[in-house]
Image: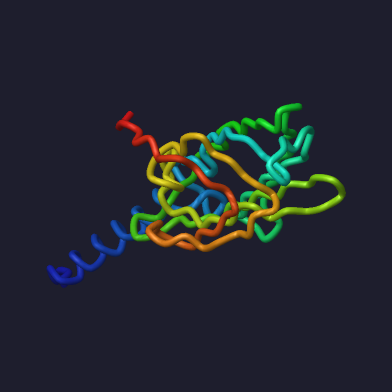
Length: 173
């Protein structure tokens, strides 16, 4: 008895759906033929940390990125004698499902004079470079005695005690 046309179509769509899921699975979720897409977990950041208006010399900066486990990934940096800092970009390759969304959490904590200052909390969904703010922040300053405030106008949760003069729009690469 020949198989019905509906049976053949159903089998074809089931197989096609399985292939799509297999090819676009999140990293670590399953074996995938594709190597994934490069994403920016944390864009490069440079600026100055101050304490009561004075440079926070040799302050410890802890950058935490939570994206694939509860513990997250932590990097440690230090400010210069002038309180200046540079954090390099943190990138990786991930496989994101076709109908999935990739969201991560960024946190920056500064340790200075035996105190802990939580200066940056951001949920990032735009995985491009400078996707956190829609561009590169110019003249970034983090005054440790300032209160952290929630900022509107950015997609996702965002609170910081840091300020910047303007955002430099980045061109498409």
